[in-house]
Length: 67
Image 1 (cartoon, rainbow, N blue to C red):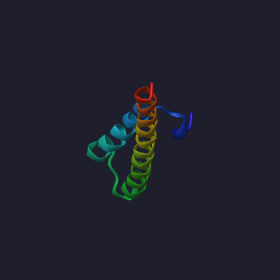
Image 2: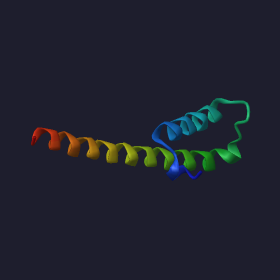
Image 3: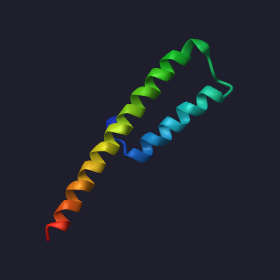
Image 4: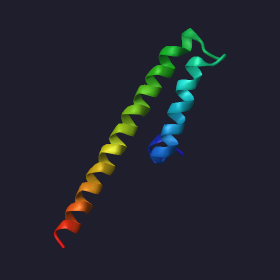
């Protein structure tokens, strides 16, 4: 399953794991840049997903207000 197919919760867990790596014993300065870029990309995806969800909720809310 690609990152784009994961739920927001799954992406958040992946991001938490990535953040924990920076504090873990496996930390490597040579890999830090790559891991940081991947985590930043994932954080942007999560932000985008949440924005889409907010937009959907706004549309649904408006449809109930019109009833």
